[in-house]
Image (cartoon, rainbow, N blue to C red; front, side):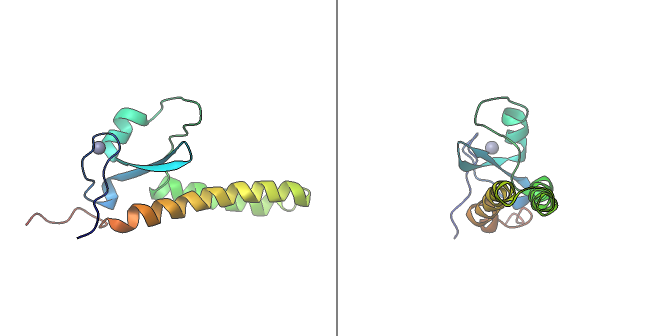
Amino acid sequence: MQKPVICEYCQKPIPSRKELITTKKLLNVHPYHEQCYSRELKGRKSFLLDNYPINGFSGNLVVFFSILLTVIMAFYLEPFQTAIVGILALVTLFYRFYSYLTYEKLLPKTRPPLT
Ligand SMILES: [Zn+2]
């Protein structure tokens, strides 16, 4: 039996990857139910809390574009500036992997059938 992934908002286990949303909060990654995320966090403005989802399609898109941006910027910027943009892209990539390895990998893709 694997360790369940517990929602940070309602403290209940998250049954599948489909219902999981992970967000970065104070340099740490937190898991939420999809409903809890949209109910509580989405659109809330706060300092140091960037509540965009790390996982799922939008998270992958952010990682893809930050790497693409680094490659494009490498042609126009000085090497030092490119390094800074590259580090930011790596941070995004790091959080994506961290989210995957810590939470997503533990969950089945869809909700398991009730037994
Ligand atoms: Zn929840």
